[in-house]
Image 1 (spheres, rainbow, N blue to C red):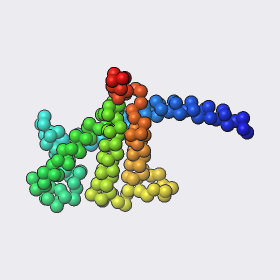
Image 2: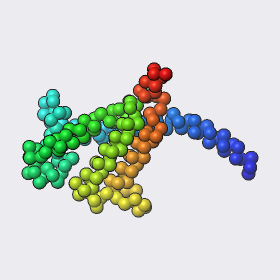
Image 3: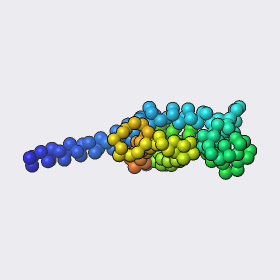
Image 4: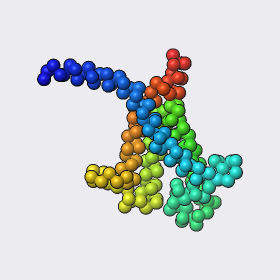
Length: 181
């Protein structure tokens, strides 16, 4: 039995070295394969008309981000405050920029941290603003049914991997680091 321990230790050390570059690459690939188009499609629904639509979000953007306040305002964007406008504009831009930065591996740790905050706010909005409380799921309930909180926990874990490990060697972050050193 004791002869197995050095073999296990050597095997573990190799996996550690492999994981340092493979895990971030796989995390960015998984993000691109599952969440990139989800967020970009959502951001596209928030664009207003014309070439400056990104700077003038649609009424639907307000309905998605501030559902109860927008309803209380009679679905009139002019009845909301400049703070609402700023949050909607920032959220729309973040939904385009943060996923792109993560996939490219640019400013990955900060971008992934920003996406974790985005997912948290998105989840709170879905549960409380859109009334998905009954569909939010319950952790440790033996039902991996894809409920909101169950999914978002997995998304957050994927993003946390990028916060702690970075983008890996096949990224713009690594290219920049090599140019600086």
